[in-house]
Length: 208
Image (cartoon, rainbow, N blue to C red; front, side, top):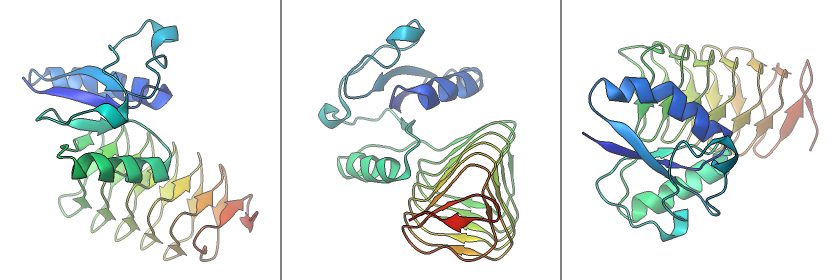
């Protein structure tokens, strides 16, 4: 039996708990608790997992850590800190995800139900690919990147580190998105995106 710990206790943590608990149970594994700053996140929902303390106070052991925070900068930063302290980042790929044999996926990545990593794609450490989203053929998603539900990274798209995509965002094939950009829900990106840019609407325009 392998005990897993969630990093974060919000809505994403509750989703991951539901997505993967049955799958882990097939091999005798389970989630045993969560880490966050207050210990109150799961209380309104019947506390399905016990609070194990603040993230900053956690002393990593051999239990795999599952990143359950959506913000890309937090995913990357906390992941790097926990890894430097000896933490083991779990990679969870849902049984209903389609993962190409040629796809490369980094440690700490989470691919939810009905997501995909297509032929020749590269997904970095600590990425989150939510339901019905995917990394297309020969596309890349950098460190800590977050694809909300129904996001389509089409063929050959190159996404930098710590980039967030809102639900339903779309990109034309072959585009590049710089580090720390944010793509709003429903945006249709038709040209390259600079680092740190915030994009919204269809066709996408720069907000800042």
